[in-house]
Length: 449
Image (tube, rainbow, N blue to C red):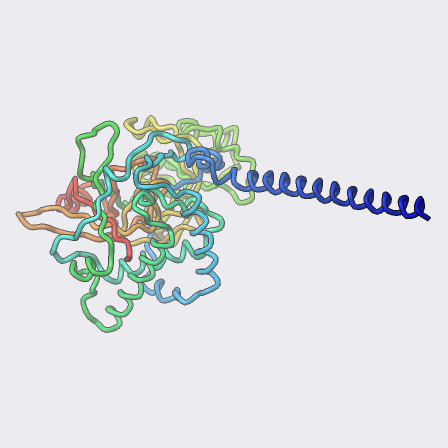
């Protein structure tokens, strides 16, 4: 009996010991696995900002300074009350802001159009929160509303396809997120709609109203090649009208081409502008039939169309049409090189108005002269509202506009904006118009509080 009891006791103790060992082993495994998963989850968040940016695949279809205007009625087609779209954008914007978030003391890594690191800049050296001067702000109310609405709608419709616009950019060093930019656009749209419907001068022209409702952040130029430059350089661009022919003639012998649809082999990236103008797409050329001639201009007409991004062609048959840059050959614009020597070549597409920024031709923002700036969308950001200040005749002038366009000269560029001046017949008319505009100006960002 005693032996039987002893055997049972040993069996019970043995089973208990095995259970304790199994539980301990399982606990150790669970802790190890949890730690491993935690480390794996944290790794992407601990990457440096530069590493994250350089991991983004390059995008070659970034617009040259390009333009286009939508009818005034365009803004009536957009309603701010679209919770599903706005919620989705807010989530994307929040994720993007977290991904690119850096502190004010951390240098901001500037990237080029291929998403490659170029240099770093301390945001606190070029961004400073102040009060706007007490001078009335100038702009056309309806035109500004149109550009604000079209830019906001671009975020709503294309944020998923164009993640570049979700980069908070340099303003992140001041704690500004993409959500803040959307909030700024929404508030301005609401304010302008109310003021226009009540047939009154908009409150957005009142500096006291702006100082009450917006953070005003002064933007000092940062030019690595001219460190003494403090004000922004304000260049001007336009849409020029040119006479052209639908067929090649002795006078109109320089083509603008369109890529045919469903042509995805990118053969066109092999050819420079000089190759194209040598006649490779013309009858007898080795690539004849692969593109469509849209118009034949003079060489001057072509270069102005390439530089400005949009051309209004008055055809010899009495018709007219806008053409806007669509895709380029993937070759970089070289700053300082004369236009005729540039290797970059743009293919065009017919459009209904002046077009600004967009990741593809059918998505580009319709813009208006007088309230649109082209700038560095990757490092400054799309939809940033800017006021420029300059002195004329001893008096201060303030002009408001939206960064709704970009171009090869702005990738990267933290010291310049390009102001869309209008549509002109020639360089002489353009020159006379822009004489009243500043070459350099003090610039301010507006961000809704």
